[in-house]
Amino acid sequence: MMTLEEAPPSAEPTRLTDDQRDRLAADLERDGYAMLPEKLPAGWIQEALAAIDRITREKRAEDSSLTGVKVQNCVDADPAFLRLMMYEPALQLCYDIFGPMFHLNQSNFVSRPRDNKTVADFVSSSPWHADGPRPGLFPKVDGAMGLHYLKFGYFLTDLTHGNGGSLMVVRGSHRRPELDGKGGSFRIDDYEKNVVKFDCEPGTVIVFHQAQWHAAPPNQSETERKNVYISYCPTWMRPLDREFPTEADLAGRTDEERWLLGEPRPAQQWWLPRGNDSERMARFRRDSQTRGPAIVNYD
Ligand SMILES: O=C(O)CCC(=O)C(=O)O
Image (cartoon, rainbow, N blue to C red; front, side, top):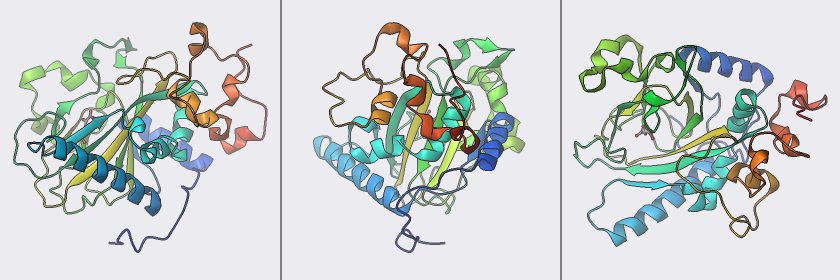
């Protein structure tokens, strides 16, 4: 396997082609998840790892009992995560699914060493669930869970050794009620043939539907597992784990970052675009669309 140092120095991610977008959309529709065709550029991985290591060190210095560290809303914690929020292939897929009116729903990182804890608290490990909160109570569309947000997992450390606590999903489960309504009597063995485990290389990006059943077992390896999750939802949905920023918070942000972070605006403008709102994310349109007029016109 290629090490991070040996990886070609690709400064920026490669834009998805329209064919790749079609394939990813089909994978998402059928399976509820997809693996993006390219890994994160090596420089992006290194920058995110440096940020995770710095913050994790600080947290452990404040509380020496900490093993795993999880930081919610990490885009506010270091520019490396803000850069991940702008990952072009992710924003292209969001544009395909939500159109121009989407924004940041959630961001977090987890640094997970082997800690021999058995509690599935989303820090040491994560139990089987669909994302919520209380996703079973979300409105259904044609009997199935609608797509409320799209979640991207950025796996920054090696998981190919197989016992690092890799993300697992149940293929196709986004079309079923949460854990088939079994609650405490749910047994993953009943779904064995559809369980997919991402024992992946550093830089792998997995996208999944929020209704996808997923879990991550404890890390039983010597390699601390470090990853970032970033999700996006339509602008009419309130973000899950963050408040909207003030103008002062947004100082120095680009136009696209301001849009994704949720710049202050009149109430109705969260529902329908006004002025050039539907152009703010225009560069994430399909190549076939960028040559023509905007496809969404609400006026
Ligand atoms: O631990 C993991 O990788 C899964 C995290 C998770 O299930 C979640 O954030 O909802």
